[in-house]
Amino acid sequence: MRMPGRIPVESLGTAHFPYHWDADALVARRQLLQFAVYTSGALFSVTALLAVLGLTRRPPSSPSRAIVSAKALAPGHAYYFNYPGPEDQAMLLHLPTGEFVAYSQKCTHLSCAVYYQPERARLYCPCHDGVFSPATGGPIAGPPDRPLPRINLQVRDGTIYATGVEA
Ligand code: FES
Image 1 (cartoon, protein in one colour):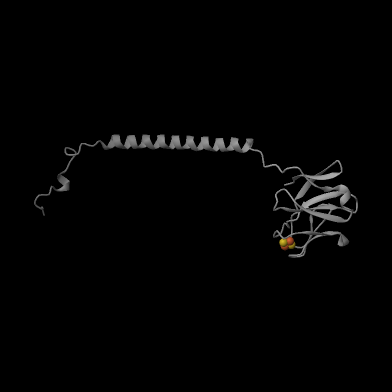
Image 2: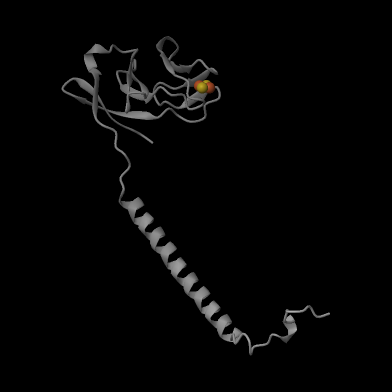
């Protein structure tokens, strides 16, 4: 049924709309290919740039900082300090063997503070009875399964310095 004033759709041919669909499809494919090539090139360039930046960036270094005079810490005692940041609790141990070692105080289980118990020859975390070796910082008992991060030390002119944290 024909409505007055309206032209039936089927009567509209290419004479009214001279559009070349084949050319349109070709252009669309070409544009899609260009888009894919440019996008891939851009992503490759960004990835290469990030890789170069990642290779040239140095990890943040820990400052060298004086801790305490070596004579002030008797064998079998600990000195607690902060390193590398002011919120990072750490401990310097003077082992009965005469060796100095230092570790982060943060337990590798759930980050409670670890303390030196020289009378029991151990580092102890009271939260879940975690035990570490004073000589190596390695876990001995309880839930911790990773060693305490070790702090590198240097002795210069009778003073012990922290010089970095081992990863
Ligand atoms: S936090 Fe140290 S043993 Fe759990």
